Amino acid sequence: MAKTLFDSLEIRQFRAFDYLKIEQLGNVNLILGKNNVGKSTLLEALWLFANIGSPEVIQAILEGRDEPGELRHGTSAEPTAWSLFHGHPPLEWISSSIQIGRIGAPDSTLSLSITWLRRTSEMDASGVFYEAAGYDGGIISASQEFVEVGPSSTIDGDGPLPAMVVKYGSIRRVLQLDDAYEDVCRRWNLQMRSNRGLSTPCVLVSHVGLDEVYLQSLWEKVVLSDAKDDVIDALRIIAPETDDFALLGNRASSIRLRLKGSSDPVPLKSMGDGMNRLFGLGMALACAKDGILLVDEIENGIHWSALPEVWKFVVKVAKRLNVQVFATTHSNDCLRAFHVGTKDDEEMAGVAVRIEKRNGEFGVEIFDESRLAVITKEAIEIR
Image (cartoon, rainbow, N blue to C red; front, side, top):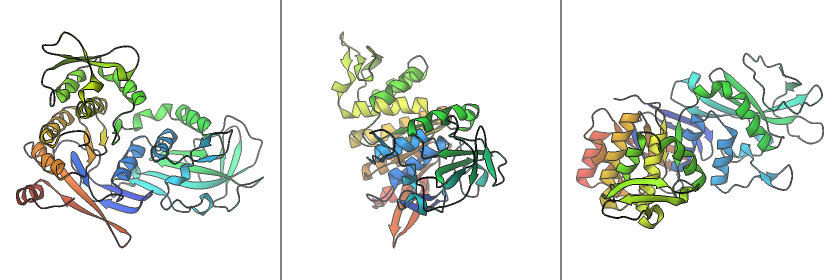
């Protein structure tokens, strides 16, 4: 089996999941389950893990769910980072921590928890995050000092200030949640410069694809590299006559294709949903090298007859670039195509994971390649 970041997964107290345990994962993983069972939430958990609890990713998760936050500074709503905790409890009631990582690997588990700080000296505007390696429960000190006082039911006036503690291995960061979120993000990026090597390359493709800003950021990583050929191969699954592509102007929406036998470039957006989906998928795979690719409802916009070739493409490129893939689906055609696309490469293990919720608890059933062979042959419904 090729190298994988996650051979198992454990999630605690994150959004829909009070506790989720997946004991087996492969190089390429297809997540199944009914609506509102947490398939997209699983991808969000992996995205947050890969970015070591980044407040910018927290903001993107909440905005992606249309959770506007609350008015705290100025006139615009700011993200309520504590909404990530299971059950959406009030901030002052949160006592458990979010945990995301491999089973039995506490040193590489991401942990997010709520604490309360009491100021012991004058506020210094530079102190939103604090390096607290070796912190023993006493004073967090930088250019100002705080005492960590634990949960509290009051955050008004001169009472304790709410903060989120982000822990990963030896890293411990305290995010002061009463500050403007823009400052929280800016200072996080400054503090994490020296730890960027600990984050994992990760690209998330939503069910509607990559937005223009995100696609623009990926463009520069792909266009001058060998990965451009992978994107062209993806487009050829639907349009074999694709010869090249280019960005005209400064907008990702201005992508043009060069087709064999045609003298005029063709706008990508005129080629239909399937071509746009494959373009985004190819770009995302190329930019997830040595990391994780997350795709929500991977079959969206793609005709069922093309899905086996899509999965073969994903397996081939993921193997070469050392990318672990997690995708969700509602489609039985996609499941059958997944088996076709993964069964012939012994080094790239394909695993289907069905998530169920019964009596308020989450359960998981694993379908490895041998089980998938039986299921697809007998046309057994497992979604």
